[in-house]
Structures are given as structure tokens and as C-alpha cells.
Image 1: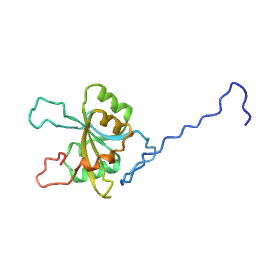
Image 2: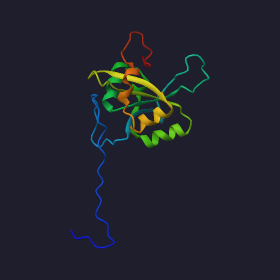
Image 3: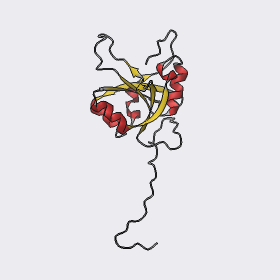
Image 4: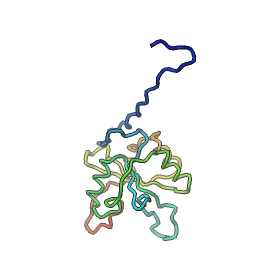
Length: 162
């Protein structure tokens, strides 16, 4: 094709590939690089409460954010009566999630595939600049595995992060 002065070459938009990881992620077709999988109930995200001592202090409360649908499926298997098990799940862009931070949310609770165990699931609450770096994939969530909680189902569990 001969280009004429003043005309641009055709542009083909190809979605960026999903983030690379050693973890056993399961990304569906059309997954975008900055997507996260988020459970919603009644139009709001499922919230985990971080106020163990003061019921009026919501500074450590935040939404559950999942790395991929595979992690969500494993979580629901572990916690079948959780808020997430009843939720509608949506791929949600980092751009949209960042607006939650800009509007006062301080913590996100990430649930992600264990990079060391194919069937493992980890969870960690993050805030501050590290939260933003993980949210935008500048820091892979797997780097937080040593600090995260391993999720397992416990008898008489109240279906919160363990």
C-alpha cells in the first residue's frame, strides 16, 4: 500500500496480553492486561472488614479484588457461603478501581493464585503506593506471596479471609 502525504497508516487495535506469571492463572478470551476480577452484590463490591477493634473505624475496610476467574472459582469452592459466592463477577479495569482509591478507599484485599502451588490461593490487604503499583501491574501481585495469608477452609469458618 502506498502512503500518501498527510494520511495515516491503518491502525489495528490488539488487546495487550494478560500479565505473565508463574501462578496458575486462568484468563478468559478477551482479558485485558489491567483487568481484575471483582465480585459485586447489589451494585457494590464485596467488602472485607478490617476493623477488629473499633466497629466505627472503616479505614481498613476494602473490596475483594481477584487476579482472575480461576482464583474466584477456587475461593467460592473454599467458602461457599461467602458474599463472593452470591455475587455477580465482572472484569474491572485498574482505571476504574483507581477511582475508588481517589474517593477514599484505603485498602484492597487481593486474592490471587499461589505461584508455588497450582491449587493454592493467597490473600493480602494492601494500601498506599504499593496498592497502586500492584493495581497497575507495575509490581506483580506474586511478589507479595511471602507476606500473604494462605486461604484454607476451616470448620465453623465465618467465611472471611484466613
